[in-house]
Structure formats: C-alpha cells, structure tokens
Image (tube, rainbow, N blue to C red; front, side, top):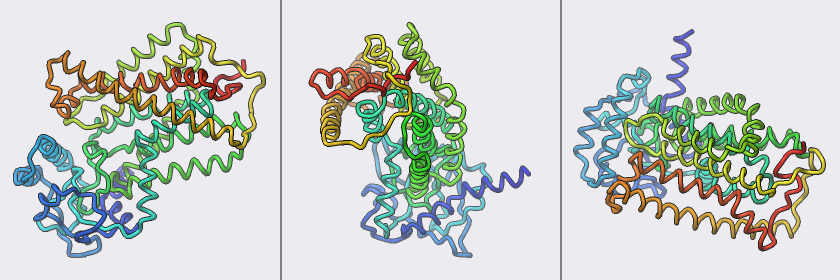
Length: 457
C-alpha cells in the first residue's frame, strides 16, 4: 500500500507530466528563436551554451544528473552580475541539495547537452506559443489568484454587492493563504524542472511548489462564496456550483500550463483547500460575530494576527511567500477593525426581512454608480498603497539605520518586510471597508445596504 502511494506521488510529481500538458496545449518546447519567450535577454546570453532540446518520447534519452556541485559550477560560470543574480544562484544550490535525495528525480529523463536538470525557477528551454487562445485563457486563470485580482474583487464585493458575505470570505481566504504558504516553506518541495518544463511565468520564481496556494484559494474563494450565498439569494444552485467549479479548474490548470506547479502541487493544494474550507465554514459566523461585536476585538484580533505573522516558518532562503502571507493577514486585520468600527457607529442596519433575497438585474443607475464607486475608491486605494509603502519603508530604514537605496535587500529582512506589508495593507483594507463607504455616502453614490451587511436577528 505504501509503495503504491509512493509510486503515485512520484508519478504526479514528475515534470514530464507538466511538459506533456504544455505540449498538448500548444507550447512547442525546444523551438529556437521563439517570438513569445519568457526568458529575458540576460538569461538568453547567459544560457546560450546551456540551452537544451527536450524529447519526452525519445527512448534513448539520458538520465539527468542532479547535483549541487553541478548547479554551483553553472552558477560560477555565469556572466551576469548583480545581487539579484547572486540570490538566484544561492537558491539554485539550496534547491539542488533538497532534490538530490528525492528518489523520484531518478526517473526523470531528458536529453540535455550538459546533463543538468535545474529545479530552480530558471527557464532553460526555448519555446513557442502555438495556441494563443489557451495562452491568454490560462494567463487569465493564473491572474485569478494574484494580488491585482484580490485588490479588485474584494473591494467590488464590499462596495457593490454584500459586505456580510465578503467579510467571511476574507477570513477563509486569509487563513488558507497563510497556512498554505507556511506549508510551502516547511515542506520545501521544488517546482517542476526545466528542462523538460517551459517556465512561462516569473512572478513567484523563488517560492517552493507544494502545495499550490493558487489551487488552494481557487477552492476556498469561489466555494466559500457559493456556500455563503446559496441560501441567502435566489439563484440556480446548479449554475452557481458549475461556475465555481469552472473557476477552480481554470486556475489549477493554469498553474500546470505555465510550468509553475506539478500535478502533485496542484492536487495537494486543491485537497488542502477542500479540507480547510470544510473545517472553517462552520466557524465563520462565530468569527464574524466576534469581530463585529466584541468590545476588545480591535485589540485582540490585530495582536493575534501579528503573532501569526511572526510565527511564520524560518526561511532557508528568502522568497515572496512570507511577504504574501503577511499581506493577506494584514488585509484580514484591516477588514476586522474597520468592520468593528462601522458596526459600532451604526453604519450597518439589520434587514427587515430574512433571506433569501431576490437577485435583481442591474439597471443603468446601478451600473453608473458602481463605475463611480470603483473609479473613486480605486484611486483612493492606489494612493493609499503607494503613500504607505513609501512612508513605511522610509521610517523602517531610519529605525534600523539602513540605506534606502538598497531596497531589494532591505525588504528581504524580516524586521522590514513584516511591518512594511502589514501596515500598508491593513490601512488599504481599512479604507475599503470604512473610509471609502463614508466618502461614497458624502457624495451620494453609496450602495443600498438594506440587507447586505448583517443577518436579521
């Protein structure tokens, strides 16, 4: 039984599965001089003698040799300077040490000129995109788990749809992100190797792979929305479930298509999301009631969330996972404090009738006021984010005697990264829930909140 499970894990973690999926979706790996290529000019020059053609079906392919020494020799031969490249080289060596002992890498076969399989986020193959529709579809799917989407999606729900639902979704999303990112840095499983995989995304290049937090949130966010609205609004539950499933599948497949995760990473992330949502769903009402009504909630909750940030697993090498987890926890903090204050000041009224409520088709007045709220509120949020990042960073540099010009290095320090993220995004989310609705009310474009912020008693 254990051998069967081990064999299944090895197969799901095999990067050849990712490369095969990319091939089916129209990514021609090994194509030279491609027009749509994710390698930047520096990497093309650096790897000109190390590029490899991948043939996943060649029976004569040689076994790839994965050693930390080989990675270090390659790093030492690199001509690209700078601190960012030095950081990448350290990651390459560390990742190679991690994967050296993993038996599943022995089964990976790839014909490469120097027999080096690189498990860092470097892209070591050329490729050509042959199916632009799938490229843009999966790029959009990946965007559904990025910061830009979250900074649009959650404000839209708070300002135009339902604050009652969105507060609870934020709780589920925030905790699932923190635990998912923490698991990554505890397990330290490398992302799919290149070759044979083509890396089409560089955004999270230094993070580990298992579990995929994109896959986790692709379960938690849409299905928490579904669970919280299916008895609250009158709509087809079958259609709602189908849309949530499509959302989840699109995001999960996008991570494989872009070469960012193995099938095991995505499967593990999705299963973790299912288990996490099943565990936290019964607690959401109590957690939201506590943050609205408890007199000490604006003190207790920020302290607990700060302790959660400080308890993040120690990093072997810096990556963006710790900062992303701090950001999501900060959003939870800002939403919590702002919701408590709005409730205390009587901004939330209980509805006169219990759910379910009818879903009305938007008219021109609704569309116009929504557009105005999103434009004005978005401007406030962008300005807040930019101003707080600059102000917080300067203050932290003065506090710790750091050179402000060394921003990339400074933001990797825990004592800088944590308050930089926490203060900035706490205030941004506070403005989403408290400041912007007051501004909308002042100029007469507030949304109707007859039943969209509280449940009837």
